[in-house]
Structures are given as structure tokens and as C-alpha cells.
Length: 434
Image (tube, rainbow, N blue to C red; front, side, top):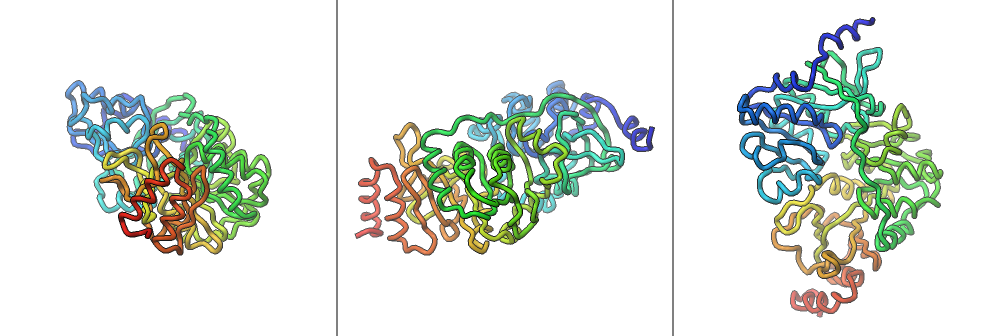
């Protein structure tokens, strides 16, 4: 038995025992989605429910269900702070039970540095190697910023976590205690894109050149675009999220990474999320590197890739070109994520383009996503001065370099036909159109 195996055994305990190490007033955090050890946080919630500890906070990104602290009875006792609302936390955020941060994803580590108030980092890792290193597997993101600031680090080892390469390794000497839990990690259901998703994906694909480096966000358009790009040549990947669509593009030969001008021959990502197919692909695969979000999403690093193509989703856009992708009016829905990082980076790239994709309507066709002004209270995710191109199922509105009148005309032309007359009327009331 090697010295690291001995150290592992000394630090090995249970989720319940790790929870015993959390003290009243602690500020805790876990990395994005599958990086959170559910048994540990639920054991902490059990202690809170029994009155053993109080005033606990935890921070999470893309948090899903199964976490006891998300229940209403824990409000004011085990408080949650969201960095990007996921399915499990969205309702609590909309009810006002959860506080939240609203910043570009690239800034998350900087905020942990600025606040410097993290007591405990709780995370899931892959099994330790012979050199004493754990891999964070399908995520890294803001983890480096957490590690710099956490007073205590606790890990849950899961043999189902893929082992990935890059900067995402943690040594056993950095870890205070270890527990184990072997279960398949959370998968993102991959549904069939809608007819409108395919229309949008095809429109964008026509504007993507061979040898482009791509970033694709989450949602139906991403899946549709992945299929539409299958005929392209020598694409590269530099992305916040590595997904099923990207695995398919690699497998069909559209992505080779050979023509990238930054990190040639490598796919670059900061977290992976998708089906088991994604996790199987990234396991022990040196062609993918997991790097910190402050590096991957740095617009200057994004721009080091020529012909950079960014594709993200929007909730609504107004005549000025302001895009909201995170709230419905003032009510939180998700978060800014890395959208603006990539809008800015693609704009700075030689030959780069950024696309914001959205269906033309919402709520069963009753509301236009193209509006004279954003809904009252809506957050501006991407600034009007940076937005390049908006795409709906009715076409592409290229906004950058256009006058207000030209922008407005272009947006009305890709709105749903039943709203175009009303939008034109509002544009004339605003003295944009005459």
C-alpha cells in the first residue's frame, strides 16, 4: 500500500461524519450541478433540522432536485444562494426564498476571491490515482476560485465520475475528509429538437464557415444546430459546456480541432453536461481539457480562436438590441451564465460571429419575444452595443453596425407574422420608424 493510500484510509469517513464537521454560521459551496455531494448536504440539513447547527448558507450553480435544504422549512436556517438557477432551485428563487448572484460566469472565481468568506467546499470527485490526485471529472468551472478561498475541503469519491484531464486535479493533501458513494451521475435528458429548433439551427449553420471554432449553449437549438453542422469541415471546440451535440460532431468528423488557432488539436471546456454518452466520451480522453472558467470564458482567450462562432439562447430582445436571457420581467429564471463572455469574445475574434437564438413567440404563441422595449424589470444579459445577430425560425437579424431604424426593421422581419403590424405601430410611436 502506497503512502497516498494510507493517507486516503486515514481521511476516509462517512457523509454523516463530514456533516458533523460543519459548524453554525458556516458558508458552504459546491461546484456546478453534478459536483455537489447530495448525501453530505442532506446530512447537514438533518443536523439543521435537529437544531444542532444554525445559520448555514450554501452556494450552488445549476442546482437540481434532491437537496433537502431547498425545502421551504429550511428558509432562514439553511439558506441557499444561487449562482445560476436550475430546475431544483428556480421555484424558490421566484418565490424570493433564495438569494442569488447575477454575474458573468467568468467572474465567479473573482467574486469568491473578493468575498473571501467560504468556510467549506463540498465536492464530488473521481477515484484517486497512484499519485494522490482526484479529478473533478465533468466539471471544473469556478472550482479553482473555491479552492483558493475554502478553509475546509471535503470530497465524495464516486467511481462513476469520469476522469478528465487539464487543470482540474485536487491532491489528497488538500482534502480534510473523504466519503464514498458509487452511483451514476446526473444526466441531462436529451430531447428531440422541435420543428422551430431545426429551422433556427439550419439558419445559423448556413452562416458557420468551415474551420470555425464553436461554442454552443444549452437547449433544443443546440441539438438541432449540432445536426445541421454535421457537413462542415475541420471545426474546433472552445466552449463553456461540452454536450451531446459536440460528441456527435466529433464522431461524424465535422470537428477535428486541427485548424484552431488556440489550443490546437484539443477541445476546451469548463464543464460537461449531457447523457451518459458524453460522460463515457470524456472519460480518460486527453483530447478534451478541462480548464478554469476564468480562463475558458475570458473574452481575450475566446478571441484567440479565429472564426469563433458563439451560439446562445435568449428569452427576449427589444428594438435597441438588448437581450434578456435570465429573467421574466424582474423574476429570476436562470442566470447570465457565460453568454456575454462569448458575445464579447466572438466579436473580438478575427472572422468571429455571435448568435442569440430564440423562437419568435412564447406562452403558446401568445407573446412575441421581439419587443419594443424589454419587459419591465427584465435584466439585460447582453448589451445592445455588443449583440451581433438574433435568429428566430423566421430568419436572422444582423444588428451589429446597423442604425436604430435598420435594427428595428431587421427584428420586425424575423418576428412572428401575427405580431409584425403591432411591432411596426409601436416603432412608429417611438419615432424609430416613420
